[in-house]
Image (tube, rainbow, N blue to C red):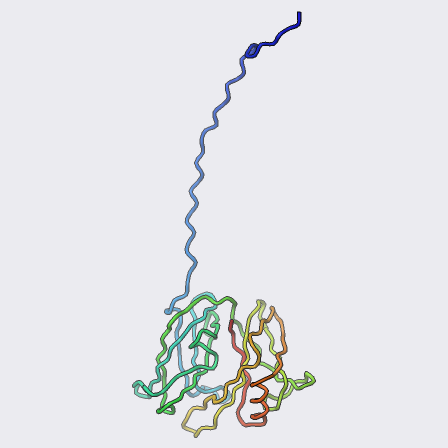
Length: 242
């Protein structure tokens, strides 16, 4: 007779062991990403530079936040007694009044101010208001001086009718910069020198770490260089932007 195995017969199977329920450890809440504030910025205006080879009407910007930031600033012109000069309009060369300037961590930030209107030669100081401040999308750094080039790529004087500009990044991280061609007036000895012509050269230039780029001088910049070359007071400036 064939053996028939009946379900449930035979040795009893060991009862399954219950696994104690476990509770996942609570994860610590992520700290909010620090954001810059107006209090992270301090300013110092220098109408006349401490050295003769520096430009006039410079606003030094110190940033105590530990990353590069983009401020939007507003300015009120003041006379030597601290009184407001209501007819004087204050604008900038690098664009800190329109969110165009990236300010690095530390005390290396600056912009160049321009004054226009009745009383423009009486400006002795400025009051700065931080309208907004945000984290920059790219770091700012220390930029090597821009080098003017002729049509064959050879270095020439910034006072010449140059055709291109070479700009380099000495830092170990990428940066983005803009170039601008400035022409200054020739004021009396007791007045500050001012940039009266401000013309961008090219657009936003992305530079790799220790990278270099050549920007062609075209359009309005080429016309300005042709007009003001061999003049007494011109310069090519590089500034961080995004």
